[in-house]
Image 1 (cartoon, rainbow, N blue to C red):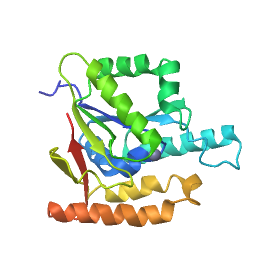
Image 2: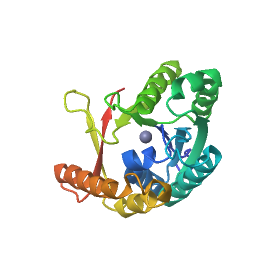
Image 3: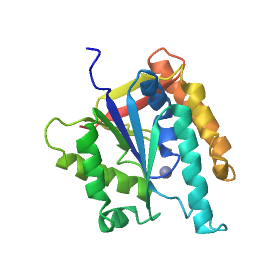
Image 4: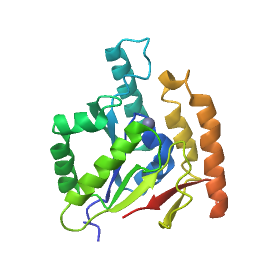
Length: 218
Ligand SMILES: [Zn+2]
């Protein structure tokens, strides 16, 4: 029993803050339970601040993501693919093999990714990438979950829903979000309110103070 390998959980996201918004509380919970969590960020987010030099934005956002990962207790891996060209860049740079190797080596029990109903093209690209890589996993397949960023997680599907009680880790999620000062001018404050409201609303469904919701699609 004691020798059992630590469970590995993989979270895939397009941008540096997606894993925090979509699953930050759950990541912190899993980490607290002793699971190993790795968050993969596909895009550098270099288009987010058009008035700054590309290299600066890239560096800042990568640092922010690593700091947020520290708060949540997960590791963060950057693939640095082009904004709005994530899928093509992923194919051209041979990232697919890297990702498959990573999955083969670590054998995740759960994989989290963007929802197909997410309107953002980069988020959709990561969803597509996940589906393709999932099909290539041989042997026992991990459970596959989708999270949502701005869109509500599907209302019209019959996928099983998973609620995770994040009452204890909710403050960590907020703290992790505050590690993204470069985002402040865009959406960070309305985002906080939104994140709070959604966690509260999900919590009501399972009679907890705060919760995150996912759909299990595989
Ligand atoms: Zn995003």
